[in-house]
Image (cartoon, rainbow, N blue to C red; front, side, top):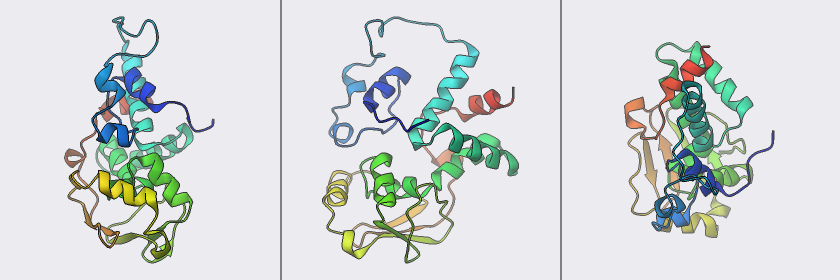
Length: 208
């Protein structure tokens, strides 16, 4: 299955939550979800009752779109989370937060995770001084992530830093925006990751 390249705001309206899929429009307070808080299409404003399975599937879709992963990738992450000790759902979120494209986004170097993924695949990002162009690369505690010297004047990165100057950084990442470098200090606790998802429903879906 190919990666979705259609209008992302339709996804947010269909699922009814802000998944941070849009960059400048969202940061400027012009999100389509704010203006039209109902599903797209001619029947979008109808109230429909969702089954238990439908609710579980919707939560899985939220996570997949939020972190930008495909079904095959998602299943791999879920299996790894299930192998680890503790809550499978919490382990899943912590694993996804360690993805390199997500960490680059969290550092403020991109306006969306999709843009961060593009920066990584195009070779603009270094991990511990070495170029890594795999968006799903799992960052470890203490890893140093930076924008390579030749890319520091990239207009996309400069624009992202300008737009996200006022947004708060997460406590598990230390960033120097002027030098465009950061350190992934620790794996976050689930309570620290503020995302509009109930991962317990996803665990129930895969437990059937």
